[in-house]
Image (cartoon, rainbow, N blue to C red; front, side, top):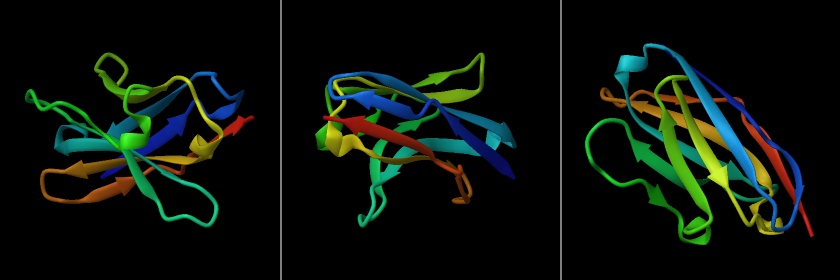
Length: 118
C-alpha cells in the first residue's frame, strides 16, 4: 500500500507562484511513476506533469504548463513537488498526486485546492 498526502495549495493572484508537495509513505520502493493531475469544476481530471522515479527519463508536462511548472523529486523528504510559476486563473483546480507502481497499482491523494484570482 502507498499513502499520498498533498499540501501547499492556496490562493494566489495571477502571476504568482505556489509549490505543491506530495508526501508518500508505505511501500515507497514499489512506486515507479508519480504524477500531478488537476480537476476544475465541470471538467475531467487532467494530467499536469509526471515523473519516472529512477532512470533518465525526462518529466512530461501538459502543453499549457510547459515553461511554468516543474515537477521534481525530493529524496530526503520522500516527496514529489510541483513548482508552479506565473499562475493563471485557468490553473484554478483541485490538484491531485498520483502514484503508479511497477505492478500497475494506482494510488491517489486527497487533493489540494489551488485558486488563482485575476
